[in-house]
Every structure is written in C-alpha cells, then in structure tokens.
Amino acid sequence: MALVEAQQSTDQVYEKISYSMKSILKKHGLTENELKVYHHLIQNGPKHANQIGKDLNIYRTEIYRLLNSLKEKGMVDMIHDKPTKFVGIDYEKAIDVIINSQLDNLNELRLFRSKLVK
Image (cartoon, rainbow, N blue to C red; front, side, top):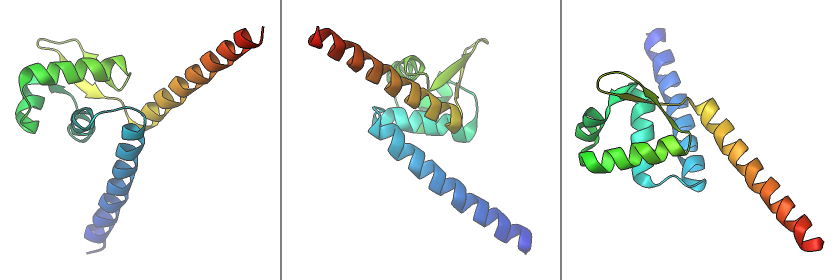
C-alpha cells in the first residue's frame, strides 16, 4: 500500500514539474505543437519521426518541421540510426539552453547600447 502511495506522490510531483516546464518553455518561444513533441519525447524516450507523428496525430511533414525547429532551439537531439531517432533533452539542460539564450540576448543588447552611446 505504501508503495502505491509513494508512486502516486511521485507522479503528482512529476506532473507539477512537467506543467511548470511547459509554461516556462511556452513563455520562451516554443509553440503548442513544439511543446507536444518535446513533452512526448521526454515521456517516451527516443522515437522515430513517423512514430511521433502517429502517436500525436500530426502529419509527417509537420513533425519534421517541428523536430527541425526544436533541434535548432537546442531542445532535441538526434540519434543517428536508420532511421534517425529523436530524443528530448532533459529538463535541467532545457533550462540551461534558455538561460544561455537569454544571456546571449542581454549581451547583444549591451553591445548595441554601448554602440549607441559612442
């Protein structure tokens, strides 16, 4: 009985973290479909693009576009296999990607500001 309660408690904590991550990622530029694909990969591990499309009921061409966008944003890695598999980076790395992106944006603004002052 205690094991079942512990599992339910773990599931609830994971759902809260997952919801918070979705909010953060959406706030920092991920679209609704990108969030669906990323979350699916986090929950289910490496998948082929065709399988992701079937699982999420999204057309194959759209899946490839979404995966490419997520890869460019640093949220998805590729496993070179035949066919290629995709895997979502873990939440900790995702937060690091967002932090580094924001730092790059701030540094660009500082550089621009210093050029304006001159």
